[in-house]
Length: 189
Image 1 (cartoon, one colour):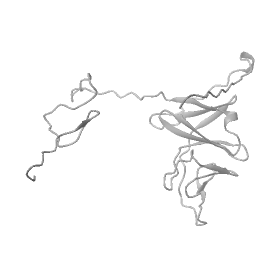
Image 2 (cartoon, helix red, strand yellow; image 1 turned 90 degrees about the vertical axis):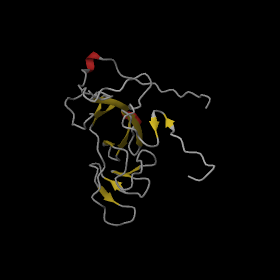
Image 3 (tube, one colour; image 1 turned 180 degrees about the horizontal axis):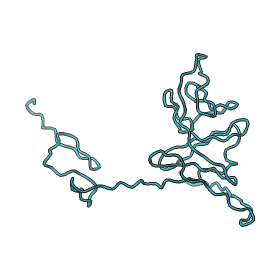
């Protein structure tokens, strides 16, 4: 080290440390929470249940419209084709990872990526590129979804397993007609 220069110090940020790691030093974690002994079994519960989640009302996803929703700390992109078929897909284009929920469009039956204009059919296969070249074998990640009584449900499982049960359609006689009220609040930024 040059004379007159100080030795760099270890810096701690949010429980993380930069610099050399001393194996004799206890691990850092949230304040007040002791680290579990290495021999104790750790049970990791998923932070969200494995089930169907209500993500939108059917009338929010009109033909030709792309809607982005949050589900269990992830985005889900919903869109409806020109023929009225509802689709739910993972948000990122397999080409270069553009987010389909921000700028993605529907052209006929296909979802179009906003970045290079790759088009994906309702089954998720790439059918056209923005360059006019042969499409790659890229596929969108599809999400299981159901449209029941004017509501859109998307299945989520911590391990990515398929649905283990279905959403029951309630008997119409047991419920009043549904209604929804949307209000926009003007708030100070």
